[in-house]
Amino acid sequence: MELTVFTIIRDFCIAFIVAVCWCVLFGSPKKVFCVAGLLGGLGHCLRFILIQLGVGIITSTLAGSVLVGLMGIFVAHKVHNPPVVFTMPACITMIPGLFAYRTMLGGIKMTNLKDVERNPDVLFDLSYNLTLTMSLLFTLAIGISIGVLLFRKSSVRDIRLMEMMRRGDKK
Image 1 (cartoon, rainbow, N blue to C red):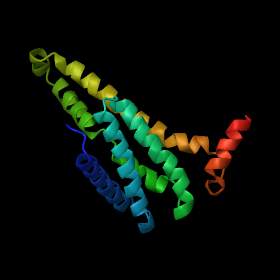
Image 2 (cartoon, rainbow, N blue to C red):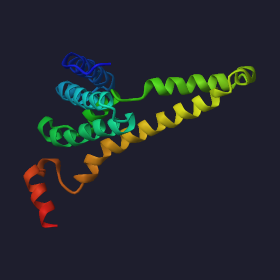
Image 3 (cartoon, rainbow, N blue to C red):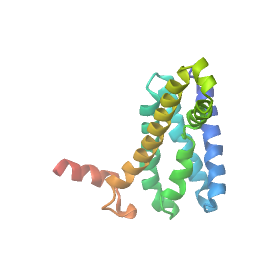
């Protein structure tokens, strides 16, 4: 697939809609719908661009979830809600649904020994998809958590980017 401005905008719009819909399902406050949509769109868009540039899917997903996690910390004070209210719906746009589906299909195929004898690659496919699914889910959890771990000693209200950078220079 060719990386064009249209494909990037299309990816952003689809991820925006998905994140907003998950906000509705989670019962999030209406004032965070737009924030979740923007974070979901930006995170998935970064992931999409990196994948199209040849960066691996796990690294791309980590970058997208870190972006969502860090931006969520900084936006939390502006919308007066905890970051999890909009970072979780935003990161759901990057859930590895296709690989999880393939894992389940492989598991179902493994229950029939005749299918396994005809196609011994079923076990390999199952383990590959399971490993990739679990890796991507762990990557999402780690990416969202990085922002919380970096700023856990500070109130979200007290975070100022320039002050954080100055503190880093003193250490």
